[in-house]
Amino acid sequence: MDATLRNILEKMPKAELHIHIEGSLEPELIFALARRNGVALPYASVDALRSAYAFTDLQSFLDIYYAGASVLLAEEDFYDMTMAYLQRANNDNVRHVELFFDPQTHTSRGVAFATVVNGIHRAVQDAREKWGMTGALIMCFLRHLSEEEAFATLEAALPYRDKLIGVGLDSSERGHPPEKFARVFARCKGLGLHLVAHAGEEGPPAYITTALDDLHAERIDHGVACMQDPALVQRLVRQQTPLTVCPLSNLKLCVFKRLQDHNLLALLEAGIVATVNSDDPAYFGGYINDNFIAAFEALPLTREHARRLARNSFSAAFLAPEDKARRLREVEAFFSQ
Ligand code: HPA
Ligand SMILES: [Zn+2]
Image (cartoon, rainbow, N blue to C red; front, side):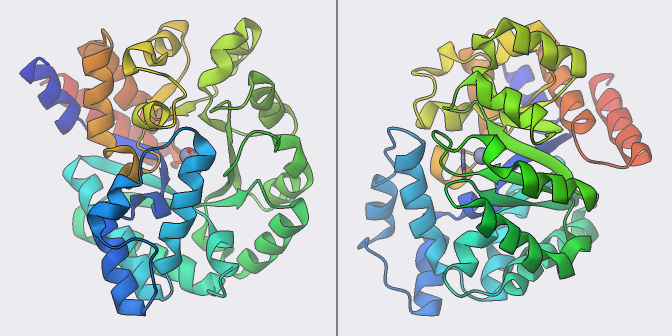
């Protein structure tokens, strides 16, 4: 691709709003943590593990992703994983990040909620001190589990309310519509938490609609299926509901056969507040800048789209108005050089 455009994509200030921190665990770190913690892995080597990363759909990925997370036991493990991601994000000129984490993946193995949240949160604080990168945590409920289990997770999170900016909904989408979690999301809203939900990744556009109507989601994670419903697209544009799009994830999980078929450009042209993110970068072949570069190589996206995507990333973020305005000024300053 054009070297100037590539340089813009790499250097422009950006926010990352859709990154599952457990999905940033690189095979090398999985093996190092397995050794440190005496956890046996069903893979002989880093290469054997990496070669298992051939996914056919969301579930085939989730099975391996949950197995990988089994090496996380101590607060230090959560810290090291998060710091490794934040280091890469800083290299990609990410200035603000909103991290997803899945407490139920860990509490179900006997790891304390405190261990998980304290390790991740401490790394985010250190990144702020080191690089001025701001960060916040979004706790996700696993939608393949029950609403009752989500309520129990929220209960465990209450002492750490100040370390969370919001809640989300992830894991197996098909057969687990957003409305299953309407009551727990209502409770979260009452606590002043921001609300997001994965919808329309491989599930139908109707799940995006119920994420909006029944969960009151402020942002939709993925949401690429909205294009199947023109009235829904119009609604997303009218409400300026952001979509956190993850191009390489969609490619690896076969949501689109080829990146050339991806609808990122169509979403932007329709007026949707789309953003570019990495989802699970260790599993899907790249971090946020890899996602930008791959999408711009596959689609006729321009410098103006890069500017729009950088802007969108901060306007869609759960930042205080003055911080948002400052970041948007940084984007404008970058693009006016
Ligand atoms: O892309 C995803 N979709 C749903 N659940 C997830 N958990 C991690 N990544 C994902
Ligand atoms: Zn995701």
